[in-house]
Length: 123
Image (tube, rainbow, N blue to C red; front, side):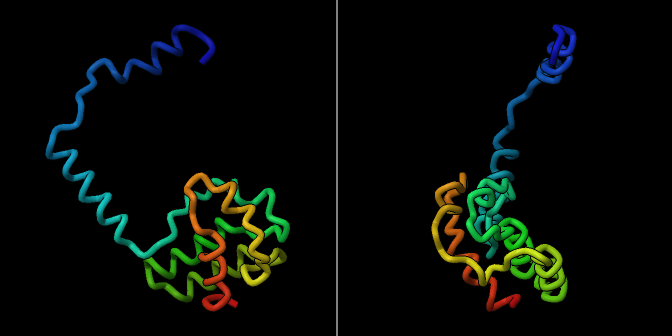
């Protein structure tokens, strides 16, 4: 925003703000419970884990492939995605478990543990 008009336009959507009612809040809580119960890797693909990786492993892309397998049980698509995203790059099996990725992860994921599972699935 560089002008007052832009500021006013951006905050105007709050003019008729209505907080969520109890039914809406309960629906969101149910959705959260369902999401928590899924067998998946909660990576948001922020890539904070990748710049300092000494092996230059494309961690979020590997997790994306793993989630395709875990969530959709589409082994073929997951394998294809893994090989597309690691083509010419390091693979999960190249992880040296240095921990840099886990230190950088804002979700505090156990990245090393997840990465160590990938070779059995994809390599």
